[in-house]
Image (tube, rainbow, N blue to C red; front, side, top):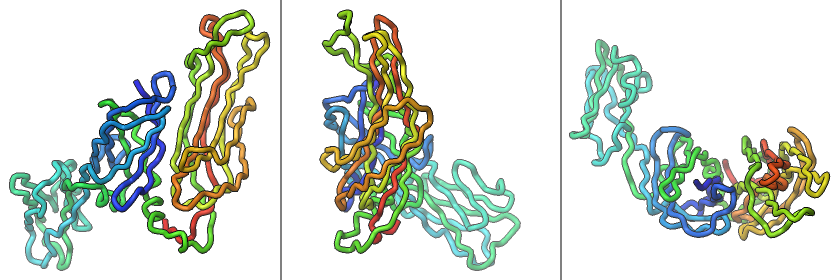
Length: 370
C-alpha cells in the first residue's frame, strides 16, 4: 500500500488553502501518475467531529510530490450557536426550534455556564437538576431545570453543526484540526495535525510594505522518525568486485511547508542517530546512514542544504544558516533519512538513520499577529 507523508497547508487565496504532500509506494519510492484523493478535517486525532470533506478528484503526482488547492468545493460542518432563552427568574422549562434545517446527527449540545448537556453524554449532573432533549424531526431543543429556578439573566445556549459549502467558517473555530487523506479509497493514517493554518491565515493579510522589523520565534518539528528500510531499494546495473548485482539503499523523504510569516531562517537544529555496518563487498566497505536537511524555495529548488553522516546515537547538531525567505513564498523544509547498500543474496545488513526531531530558529515579520 502507498505511504503518505504530510507536507503542510498554506493560505492560497480568499477562500482556499494549498496542500502539499509526498506519496511513496510500498518500497519507499516516490509515486508518479495520478491518484484519486479525498481530504477530510476532524477536530481530533482519532474519532471526533467531521469538520470538512472534499473530493479532490484525480491528483497529479510527480516523483512523490503533489500539490492541490482545497476549501471551496467541499462541505464544511461549522458550529452554530443560538440562544435558547435568557432566564427571567420564574420559568424552568425552555424550548427553541433550531434555525437551520440541516443539523448533523449527534452534534447538539446545551450549556448555561453552570450545567451542560450533549447528545452523546447527556446531562453534566446526570439529570438531577438540569437536563435537555432534542427532537430531530421537529429540530426542537427542550431544556428543563428540576427543583430549581435559574436566576435572572442566565443565557441558555444551544450549539450544533450544520453543513455549508466551503471551509472558511470551520477555520474560524477555536479548535484543533486534523487532516485525513484517502488515496484511491484507502485512508492514510495516522491523521496529521494541521498546525500552519493559524499562522498562514494571519500572514496572508500582511502586505510586504507593512513590515517594519523582525523578531525571533521557534518553530519545532518533533517526533518525525524515519528509519531506513533494511531490505528495500531499487536495482541498478552495477556489480561489485565479484560480479554480483547489488541494490542502492533507500531513503525516506518528508517535506514540511513553512508558514509564510517567516522572513529568515537563522538556524537548524536536528537530533538524529546514524548507524554503520561493515559489508564484505568490496572488502571492508563501511556503509553509514545519513540525514539531510534542505530548504526549498517555491519552485522546489534547494537554497540551503546540510548533511550529517557521522556514526552517532542521539546527537544534537546545530547549524547557523541565515537563509532569507521571500515574503509570501511557499518555501519548505525537506528532511531525508538514508541507508547504505544492501545485497540480498548475501543477506548483509547496512547502515541506517533515524531523525528524532528538527527545530528551526527563525525571524518573523513583526506585522504578523499570531
